[in-house]
Length: 387
Image (cartoon, rainbow, N blue to C red; front, side, top):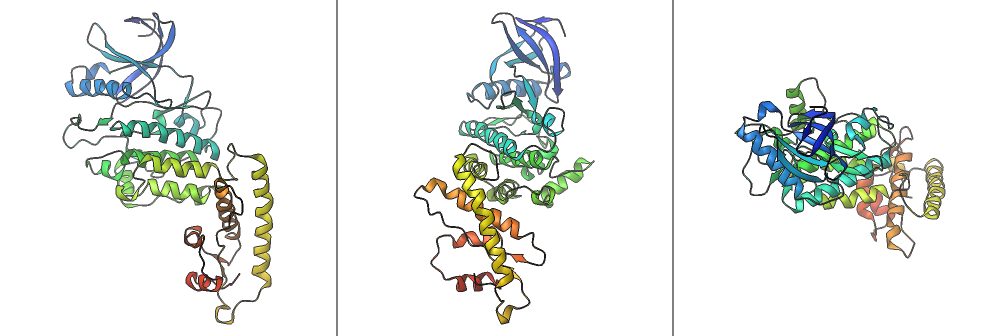
């Protein structure tokens, strides 16, 4: 088709293809702009269901007006009956290309980039979910990142609008296997929480440089999705913040009722994770500097206390310690995440001491703002230090 003119679009080059279509770069001769044309494969032209699904993609996506969702210009048909969608053309590369190292960024992605991309994807999905649209095929190859770093969610070909008729044949599995939610793999009815699962898979992939569920066989991947837990991100990469580990784990809960129930909840947590001092994001430079100065001092004091203070007699053989949540003494409540970030960093660093049991951040955070004495907290957490 290269060099042909379809309607008022001149085909320039082939960009790629997938199960639901072939995509070409083209010149809009009327408006003098570059566009991407997605054609339904010829072999599907005779399939009414595939044709209807293709039209459904255009309608679903064109109803969404959001900076993180690909802009749809129109849907049209060639004289011989081949459907195509004209959409905005973006200079950039897919997340899959970035993760696999085909672009300037090598695998895995920088932590701040991964959080930024995940946040933008979540914001785009939030807009779709508010309109009752579930994408159902979120994956790294469906996420375009422009040269300016802006995310564009592509391909709503498997989207399901609330109240719309299912456009898949009875019993058919919808989605791409490594990114499928357990309910998709079980061929059950899905809702927006399946997108949250898939976004968790993409976030894991960006951070680890690999998929959470892997195998040479689709059946084995499906089994893992439904029955196994992926390796913790902290075991794959040492600089993963515990908060980010928690976000991914919550996205990948097998039971959809245990996941984030709305993308808005995930957005809040991603923003907090992005504001951590250890993640290079926009934040007041003076405050970040103070945190990095204070954290090593606090850590040194705690380590010193651990080695210098005597153990209680009844716990002489139990080397354990709990780092309680640091208190924000600033008048600005928005600085709360700095104290939480310092607490997390200190716990992470002390955990590296051989032979020392350190109580997890999840366990100690429930004592934030408590009036309980240190001795009482020590007994409840079963630690061998009263600090």
